[in-house]
Length: 208
Length: 223
Image 1 (cartoon, helix red, strand yellow):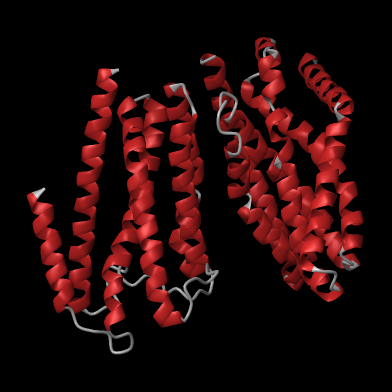
Image 2: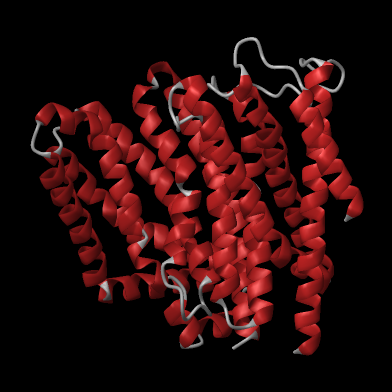
């Protein structure tokens, strides 16, 4: 908990000190929220997919607990990504929303998260509920590669990935460092919330 | 030989059932036409506008009206125990699901084809567009049957939340609508888009028997 607090503070300081973009001015700092939350939204869904496959194949109840605990976190990060993206898009592109491949597929990811949360409230029988959600998550993971490669497959307004090219990142190190620190900070915050929710879920199940 | 006979018997039973429930099919088609009328009332009768957006409207209304009849995909067979009896006669659930999908495609979606030329007369679509619409609907409705099987078997034990089945079908039918409406502007890329649609159909034909059979097993175990 303390480590993540320190990392968040260091990240915020680095973001404050980071240089302004010569074209975008101050709005470039939205990136330090936008990119980590988008990354975490995808990471959360990937974790849920892996845990669903493990849970169905080996019948481990812990993975269903993880699925239930992690889904709202992913939904919140996706929402954060969409909101910060549209706040960034208004001054840069001139609109809040365009029907672009990347934006639309992330919006569909938000819908999938919401369906998962709704399915959690739907069924009465716990066994049915968990397995249904796990299979739905596996089927819905078709969306993940579409999000990842949408900027390469279609000509879009959204810019292509500039961090993941590990050999030569097309970004200056003065901007890359705060971005990476913020990503680590976001991941740690998400991890802490996930651990708390998993603990609470296990306690609830123990009492029943 | 006995195996083929079983499959034949199942198809004959489905045909009989859909013949007795033919009013249901017709009311789906009626819903489709009524929603077209409502669209036209809402947009006004500008012929040029209707011709440009007609294809998209027809496709989205076909999707919406095919989600209406989803709940009875498995529910009757599940409630009166036909699914279990068929399983006990030596058919795996995956095979039953595959046959149900094919019979739903043949006896529910294909009769829907007669409504498409009528609807395209209402929108003044050209002959080329009607042809595209028919071809894409034949492939797309197979995908819709697969999706319907998945969402119907998912909601067998769901007594509270009725709209989630339709939501799931609409969510996964987004690629169908993209490619089948986009085929109109494709020009020389016609065959490649058709191939993409067939590819999606094969993917869902592979996934849905497995997923639906798992859902049905879960539902039978927990009732």
